[in-house]
Length: 353
Image 1 (tube, helix red, strand yellow):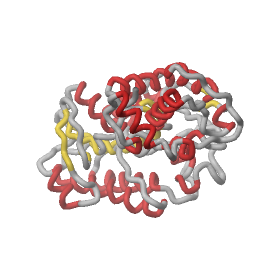
Image 2 (cartoon, helix red, strand yellow):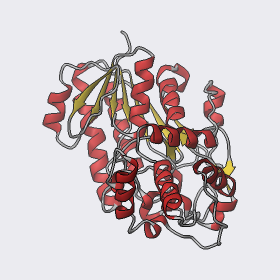
Image 3 (cartoon, helix red, strand yellow):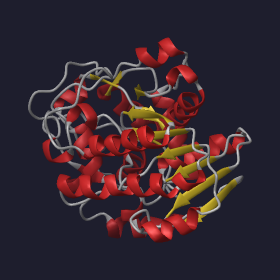
Image 4 (cartoon, helix red, strand yellow):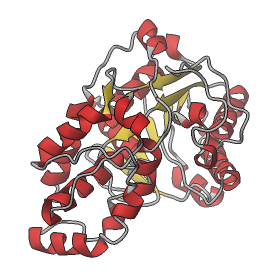
């Protein structure tokens, strides 16, 4: 049977990159989202993952061989994260069950598998870095674990293969995304240049000085494609990062140079963006009008809470990818260039000046 993809969350950072890659590979691709975005070669489907009947009707007649689960919905507590996000996975896998065509389902989670959920982020007993896939679950509630359990149960029931993908912070372009560090930093740098405010690193001294890594959405898309079509990678969990490491003390200067501003000296104390940007909606609207930007609502572009969580961590976060390398995934992406590519794309789309 020819490959036919269903990308769940196709309007997001990861989903749009996956759909684009598979369409370029000449796969028939269906992109599922509540608010689909036009993408060449992708058949867009609109449905709410929390409404089983409507979801089943939207996917009826579809016969996917590969399903890519790239979405989640942030809730007010981890208990609600577990309930809602597990239900979304369960509803999708139930909706495609009747086709009897699914051969592989790939689930995107992340490093909160090792770090814990936002309510207990980086606290308690954590695994030693670099994080490796054989390190077990933390003894805390975590919606990633609930999503995995839904995937494993459906795979055992319906006989398809699976893969779990654990990226670090993802860089890419998507308007209205709940976790978007690169776009948040691009908007922040643009505001600093426009207003003359210092371009201050918002995070902790540990993050400023320690080694870290990241995941380009295009690198993650390649990894999803690889794992879902490589027999040796079936039924495995994988870390996935760009393949390089850096310190934010270096990367902050690189970002400042791209925007033509000076990086402010690090002051050893965090300067959270949620505070720095709390009153920037009016500034952004003024900038949007002056420069003819396509998005006047700053809330559609930035997620300072998420950027603060990542850059404020009091621990080193480095990820091991040896497992993927051993099985044949050798792609690499320079992280500074990943940032620059996002910035250039945002500027080309008139999302930043």
